[in-house]
Image (tube, rainbow, N blue to C red; front, side, top):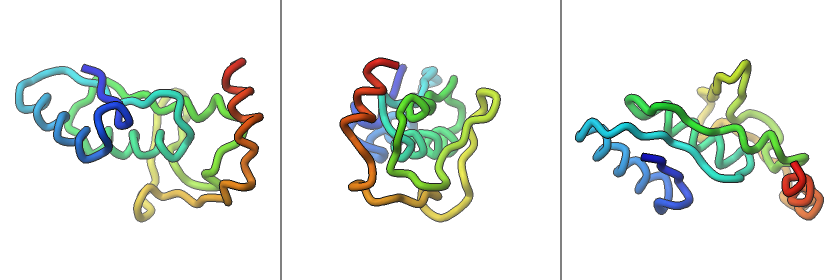
Length: 111
């Protein structure tokens, strides 16, 4: 079963679905679709807090040229995702006005 936070209704709803899957020994993955680093970081934290997802997809943010996450968040090294132990999602943000959304979307569309 593929659980995408934005499609199932948020982090809490996704956690509930994970608990049901785990209680019934249903294999599941936790991922997200075409999201920036803040969403991928939330997915990574959710996966880390889960018992045994088959895998998690948290690399879509690498396809974007710009992002609102200035520092912190999920990191990926040799295909392995790692999350910070800082409070919350462990990220610092820049002003959304500093991100050129149009060029970011165009870059992603042609990636």
